[in-house]
Amino acid sequence: MSAEVRASGTLLWHSSNAGADMEQVQLRTDGLTWRVVDGEVIVLDVPGRVYLAGNHTAALLWEALAEGARTDELVARVVDEFGIDPETASRDVDHFLEELRKRGLLDGP
Image (cartoon, rainbow, N blue to C red; front, side, top):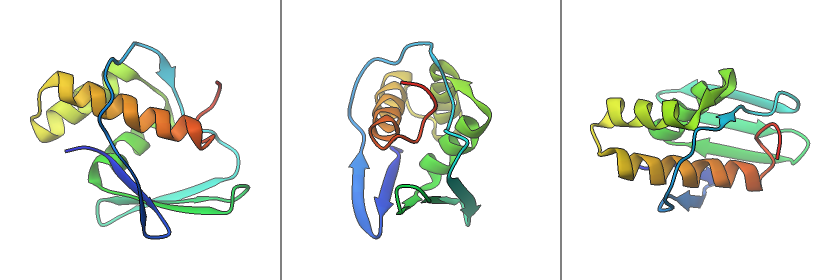
């Protein structure tokens, strides 16, 4: 299962990149309000005035990112939860993180 996130009902991404590394990543702590509802994550980026909704995979990753996690830990969560191969999970996680970076939702660069 790949992570999908929608902004105001429009599909933002569906994953397909390769190559996870071992970096520590965490969500930005300021200006983000979020909740997991019925297995999906609902996010309000207050400064960006953007509403995001993510599927079950996105919620699984989001909760880990709220605490901070290495990319290999995120990949393991996806593999354990959905029983997919590590290569596919790694591509999905990489793409998800890249989209979060583009939107300025992660701490750091």
